[in-house]
Image (cartoon, rainbow, N blue to C red; front, top):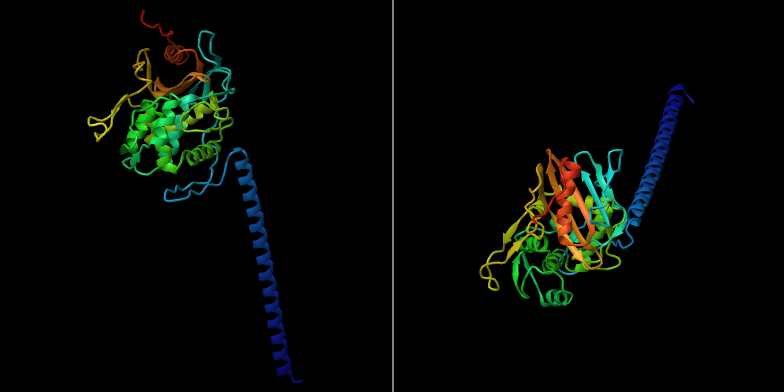
Amino acid sequence: MNKGRKQAVFTRCLMFGAAVFLLVLIAFGIVLVRSASGKKGAESAEMTAITLAASETYTDTSFEGEKETQIREPAASFVVYPERNNKSVEFSEDYDAKSALLICCDSNEVVAYRNEKERIYPASLVKVMTLIVAAENAGDFSETVTVTDEMVYPLNELEASMAGFMPGETFALEDALYGMILESGADAALAVAVHTAGSEEKFVELMNRKTVELGLKDTHFTNVVGLHHEENYSTAADMVVILEYALRNSRCRQFLERYEYTTAPNEQHPEGLKFTSTLFSRMYGDEMPGVKILGGKTGYTDEAGNCIETYAEINEKTYILVICGGKTNWNNIYDTLSAYSVYCAGGKRYEPPA
């Protein structure tokens, strides 16, 4: 074989070897990518399983029929639980509450506490979560909502608090939300749930999914109204987290801070329905020097006792107070005014008029 031919054979062998080596590298790279992808998928599935394990009733929901709502995947915990420190104090014995928690939102510190991690029945404080889920999943607040016989009559039999909507009446979603928060209307809450998710059951699934997203430690819902049920429970600490989350949503704040609201006139109510806050009908919010109570929600059932949650501005800081298990509505109001004054503004207890 002459020298030129030998050189050509050598060149072809060299090229063939290089091609084989390149193919091996490509194959090896594909194996690495697939392995990493599989590992990432497994880790993702594991994290999802851990997240969902926090809610015993979680289901992957897809609504049937015409009314469908897009559900986001759970996110990381939104609020870090405020913790006690050497400045935190226990509520004195003259506060009428089974459990209570007062926090400073700006520093995320516990100011005063009592059994804040013990399980309680939240009564109509549940409606703050109902408001959150509606605000995040419903469309425009001008959308039309309808109340039906099936919503109203069972609630009347249960003697639930009502906003006053009539069966067959149509009104704006905004009207229903004001009726739910200001008058604590069970009819309004149920209309909001059905409009948003297609049924109360589907809406409750969204509420429980939200508890997972927020990282709540001991909260579970069975209805949107707050009617008593053994599995409808929370804690004062969790209710603080829920209210703090609501305050970061301007769509929620507008309802929590309103004193009065009148719906648009319609056939059933030619002059509209007038709603008055169950909170501000018992207080002005500025009775105590240096304290300005901005909004909140009240609740009551025989099993829950009297419950109240509020937020206030004091010395340019925001505070949240939740009181559960009070004996009377008025004790809740007096204790709310007193707690902000004594523990946050350095003032005195509220003294009701003689």
